[in-house]
Length: 478
Image (cartoon, rainbow, N blue to C red; front, side, top):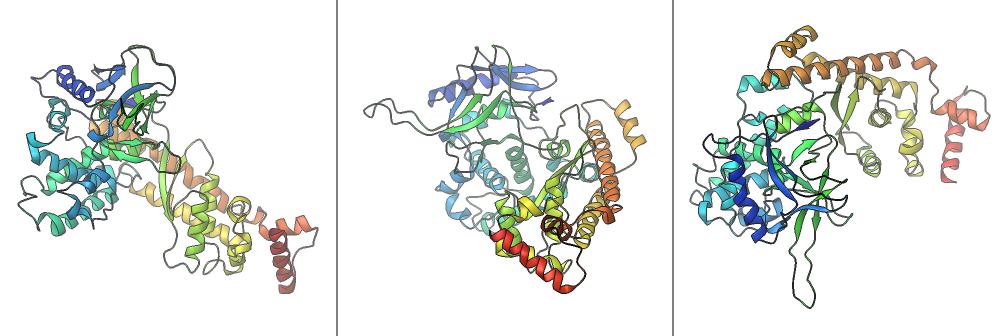
C-alpha cells in the first residue's frame, strides 16, 4: 500500500515551483539532488521520483547532516542547549525536534534553515490526530488499539514540563506567541509525521530521528524502494575535496526513471499509521497491536528484564495479532514470563535461576511451563484482547455501512476501515485464547517433558519433584 505524508498547499502557489528552490539550496550546501525530482499526484500529493535510472544500492539523494533538525542539534544549540539539558521527554526525540522547529520558526529569516522552513510546500494540514478536535480524537480512541490516548497524554506532559521549566523561565527567548501549547502540538505533529529514521553507518549505533529537507517528501509504501542511512564525512585526498556528513536515500532495488521513490515509515499496524501519520494504507489487513508489560513490583523483575533484553524485547512490549495467523509464539513466551514465579506460580521460580539464564527464553518459554502458569498467561491475553474489543465503537454492520457510503479520503472512512480490520483481528484473538484455555488439561508441561526425556514415571511425591528439578539444573549446567 502507498500513502503520502499529510501535506497541504496554498491554492495560489504551484507545488512544484515551491519545492524547486529547496533542491537548489540543498545542492549549494553539498547535497546531491541530481537523481530525484519532485512529483505530484492527485491521490498522494507531493512526492519524489527517480530523475534517472538508478541501480540497487546507489544513492538517490543525499542531504547534508548540517541541514537536519534532530535531538542532538537541539541540545548542541547555544540558545536551546542550556534550557533543555534536564529535559527527559516522554516522546523522546520528537519533543526535542518540535522545540527546535519552533525556535527556527521564531528566528524567521535569521534561521539558516529559513528557505526550507518558510517554503509554501511545507504548509501542514490539520488532519493529524494530535490536532483533531476532541470528538474526532475520542472516535479514534474507539477505533484502534494503537495507544493514541497515551500519545496525547505524553505530549501534554512534555509541554507542561517545558512550560514550567523553560518557557516561563525565559519569556524573552521563548515568547508565548510561538511556544504555546497549540504551536507545540502542531510542531510535534510535524516532527512525528515527517521525521525519518536514519540508519547509522555503524551497526553498534541505534537508528535516530531527523527532520530534513526533501527527505520529508518521500511517500510511504509497505514495500519500499529506498531506505534512509547516514554517511560520515570524508576528508578527501590531501585535505582537499572534503565531503560533509550526509543522510542518504539508498535504492533497495533498481529504480527506473520516473518511478516513484518510497520509504517505509515504520513497521506498524494501520491503526498505528493512522495515529502517527493520519492516513491508512490500503488494502488493510485484519491485524491489531496489543501492549503487555511486566508487573512493576515483581520480586524477579530484574531477572525478567534481563531475559527480555537478551531476546531484544522491552519490559513494555507490543505484539501484532492477525486474523489469519495463530497467536505469536513470542507473545505466548512473554505472557508466560510475566507469571513465572511468585505470586502466580512460585513452584516454577527455579527456572529464573542463573543456570537457566541462557536457555529459558530459547528452550523453555516457547512451550507451556505449568498448568497454573499457562492458565494465567492465557487469561491475561484473553482479557487484554476482550477489553480492546469492547472499546471499539459501533458494530461490524455500522462499519461496513460507513465504508460503503463515505468518501475514501474522508476521516470517517479511515476510522471505519481501521475499526473493521482490528475488530476482526481481536475477535480471532479472543477466540484463539479461549480455545487454548479449554485445552489446558491436554498440554504437556515442563515437568512432563523432563520426565519423558529422562524416561521417568510421573511425579508422586515432593521428593521426586525436587529430584527432577535438580536433574534439570544439572542438564542445563552441562
